[in-house]
Amino acid sequence: MNASPSDLTILFYKIKNIFKKSSKDYRLTIGEVLKQRNIITERQLQTALEVQREKLGKFGKAIRLGQIIVELGYATEEDLIEAINYDYQLSVASLNDDIKTLVNEKRHTLIEGLPAVRVPIWVQLFGTTFIIIVITIFILSAVILNRQKERLYDQTIKTGLVSLKYFGSNARIGLLEDDLIKLNSLLKEATTVEGLLYAIIVNNDNVIKAHTDLKQINHEFDGFSVRGDKQLQGGVTYFNYSLPNGHKALNLTEKVTFQNKKLGEVHVGLSIDFMEKMIRKEQLTIVVITFFIVLFGILVAVLLGFRFSKPLSKLVHATEEIGRGNYQHKIVLARNDELGNLAASFNRMGDELWKNAQMQKSFGKYVGSEVLDMIMANPEKTWLKGHRNEATIIFCDIRGFTSFSEEKEPEEIVEGLNQYFEIATKSVMNHGGYVDKFIGDAVLAVFGVPVYHHDHMARAVKAAIEMRQSFNSANGAKNLLLGSVGISINSGIVLSGNIGSQVKMEYTVIGDSVNVASRLNSLANSGEIVVSKNIVENLKHSLQVKPLPPQKIKGKSDLVEPFVILEYNDMDR
Image 1 (cartoon, rainbow, N blue to C red):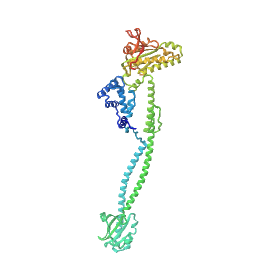
Image 2: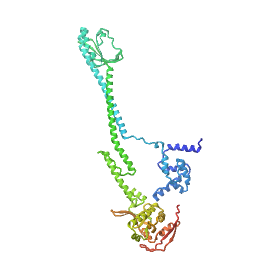
Image 3: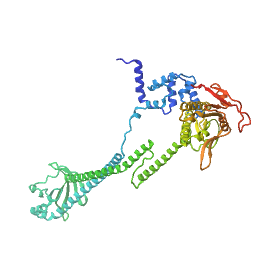
Image 4: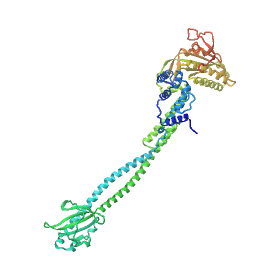
């Protein structure tokens, strides 16, 4: 089967993307892709990035670059999806997909995709110790062997010189008397000296008078085939040469004199092979010692490695447990050293994280996730200390709750209230608000602070509509409270922040707008949503309302114009 050109192109891009370096800036990466495919220009990209930054500052969260490009009319969503799928070999269907994560996973290079080689600590200690020991032993061996070689050489020469002096001093009388028996008796024990190859005594006529090889006596001394004498102290000369049998020798020569008259010469031959044999013997000894030292070092390195790697493995496992949220995982490590202190500190950290998690979990029941994230990220921020904002307030209250509570058992009342609070809280959080507090059977919810949303009025109305629908759906004989809820909404400037004392403090909103929302709630019958005039004016294209007679409410000199919501048409759908 022949591959089509498009298949070959896709294959080319797949191979290319394996080796392509992934970008750390997702926006620029997507922008470059769109520019390369001539979907947008550089100027349009910079404009879109600027709009993205403005929206981030205005709404408190980043808007995806692709969505901004579509909103600005630079390209259609279909064009963007096609470009992204083609360049990154993805299969996303909408800009709402998590494209950033998919792109980062797809754009890893081949090297980045390879797993890092994991080398246990005990192996690292073993390797390091082994290398240090081996290098140290080799250096010491080289130094020791060199010095030993010099000592053996010097010792052998000293032995030869002693023998040479001894033979020379005692050969005078024998040479004067030409006494072969006396001269050869002198050399009789020479071959017993270790490393001594031969000893020769010759007279002035160059005739051998004494020799360790008795067959050479009275033969003419032929000398040595290789000469190149060097002078030692005391008139002794020496040179190296090879014997006919292949052995290497060091020859020492000294003249025999009597009353300054030369009588002959004494020659002593020392075995160089013997010296090298002794050096090799020393080398073998050092190698054996080195082997046992290395073996001992390996054992120590492995034991140390396991001693350190085992507690570190426990710490790694504990870190993984903490990462999975198991903050009560403990490290049992009976060590009186830094690792023991680290384990104890780790356990204390786990306890603190568990306490914080429990606090966050409990606190999250009182505020929305967005508010909780902001508080945890920067608890000292000024908006917690008091700030004026425009916000929308919802009040929910149960009609006839006092008479209802007088007729029912406490357990039934609590169960009914919990269901009512659960529905109200869920509806508020679904639309980006948070429940400020429960006041008896009333619920106070806020939209627009501390997380600002430009459409906080619409969000509040949607939450109220959803709340009413949920109350109606869940209403029944088991919980009559749900059918008796009146809802009111007002919008305006509020003061938000931490209010209270050092003993007890809560994040809340106060102000005239909150009071008006509370007063409007008294005008809402069961199942009704009453809103103020400013809500209607801002959402006039979405709301169908019925005006109520202007009301005089406490704290306001002017009459308030309330409205009952009949229908809401979501223009964003």
